[in-house]
Image (cartoon, rainbow, N blue to C red):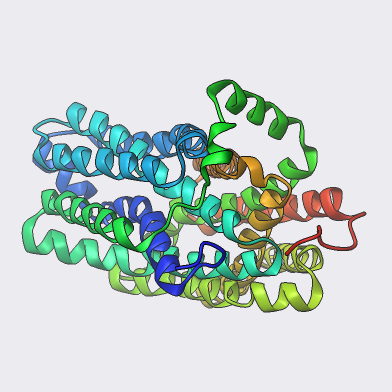
Length: 401
């Protein structure tokens, strides 16, 4: 197996590792009411177990990114998956909400390895349009989570209650470990590792935080992520409570967005090769903002049709499928020597931006579509501004191979 290329099998393994954390979120959502009843916990305390997981995902990615530069890619993945699996067992056995919240934080730390390191593996092996193609395939596997996980979670809960969800994600981690042992090579060579130390890691973060081009690309993706987080938090109340969809209908509507994102992401490699990654981001981010501005105008002018919301957000999701993987590739392009650190910081900043957006919009949420749509549109329009500030004077891609 050549170290200079990445096979479909390896992409599937990396996608599985990336998806374990999101599965632990999406499978878990249908169980929240049952957990509250089982542990005699109020709604806020149960929701804290979700918040703890998100915070840990954000905090853990820089840690595992730095470790992957110092130890190689595989050892931190082994550590993260082991921590995730053990914490999942603890969650399944938890007898009170405080224990569950604590273990969900630990579980999120373990999941952070699978979020941060696979992008660095892609960067180790490819740059340019080939990296965009590999990143889009990675996103294909990763993005199956919002389609399958809620339905899978409902089925698992019906079969064996909320505790079985944690046994299921523990099994997924074990399968990921087994697949990685034989199917994933070490892509960080010994010479590169020997040059990585804790001091060098701190220097790497200082370099990245001073690199305005890198930060601009990260936050272009973060704006798209923020819009999705706002939709993730608000859509159950809007689509189910306001528009009257059933839980199954909501799952199908939610899946449409993931399908649009996944489908469009598969064209990033070919479009990037033909037109250039920089031009692709400019066009896609601008188009996404235009679609979301149209949706906002529709609601501000008194429109109130669910079909319009679903259709326009479907289109916007497709453009996000072009923006997010492509900006990730461009952000890592100039930082191959510290790709693990750069990937981890990218994930952390995007995760925290999305979480902040979700909380801010939540303050104004009233169960109606307009606050949610304002939040989504604000993210998309901010993405346009950042795109043209960051890439407005850039007319061609960085040199790639």
